[in-house]
Image 1: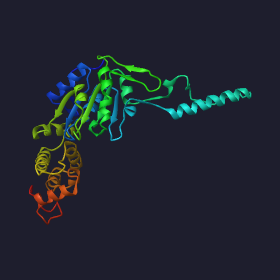
Image 2: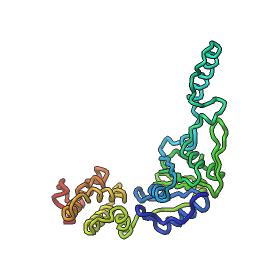
Image 3: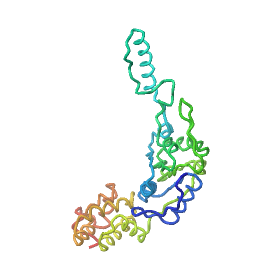
Image 4: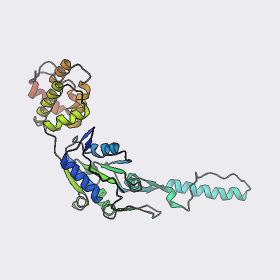
Length: 305
């Protein structure tokens, strides 16, 4: 039976009560949890940290523009099947010639089509009780991809290609499924209807402080306070791509290599700003708003000094 105890996060993941409740409901009902929200708000980390904390088997499917259900569920290896068919014919011919050593098909038999079915993460998860399946950034997929999953989500089963073998689980044994989306495109209504939905709001500063404490429990308070102040100031500048939680953590990971006073100065001068700001237009906007029109060396002048 799937693991269904309430999970409120771990030493490395801050899970607020609303997210914990949605996650618990999805596992109790045997339904996927669809999480939307800004990039870098911890959507992907939820199943990763849950599986790690509970010591559960994890299967991950990173979705792309060419994703298909065959890749996600299972596909039939026609090339290997044809090659083995030819080997079997050759072995018959070798026997007729009195040759006793047969060519190997590595234990596969063309009479058993399941030998040629390559299981994807979905089929593996459905075959592994108490496992975790992450479908990451489903909004990047072709429109037909989520629609093609409707049958499997409704009936909790997959039909293997060519062989017709059915991999099926009960509601109680459904793997924990988390689906993430950055809302690059709207998902079909029918697909959303098969999921438990949760939207992760961007963390407020006090919540962000708790997230940072999870990752850097020994960080100096002044360093963290200054970093958070500048981070949220950058997010208010109207950048085309605002810095995310993940990028703030990466910035602090770099800064923590320095002593406290030096670290504070490096933060105030925005050293390593390329960790936070990702386009030339946004860099120019930061330069104009925080350093003036002509200054190109971020370390020389800052409104935070």
